[in-house]
Image (cartoon, rainbow, N blue to C red; front, side, top):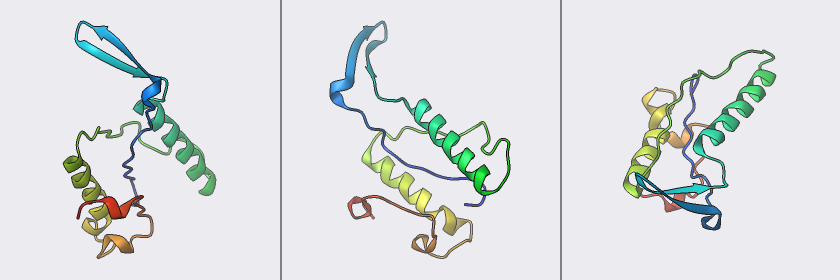
Length: 113
């Protein structure tokens, strides 16, 4: 897309790195693996620096606001992936999402139609 990007990913969490803590609100699981906030900051920082470098410019690249959403089940995952794939179609850039050169879906064969 010309003014935004969509990314759907699953952070790596090694079950052996999880620690369990009892809190007033119930069980809390923590991991040594990076949190979603850390992953997004790294992703946005790297892509902003690289895009500015390629465009021969400096300064803020991404808006400070982003929409992060945790996907909780397979049905929601399929719905969101379909939305992301069809975003360039809805914008009138291509007629079929497969024609958009910046779409990449790992494991496409495992996704439900």
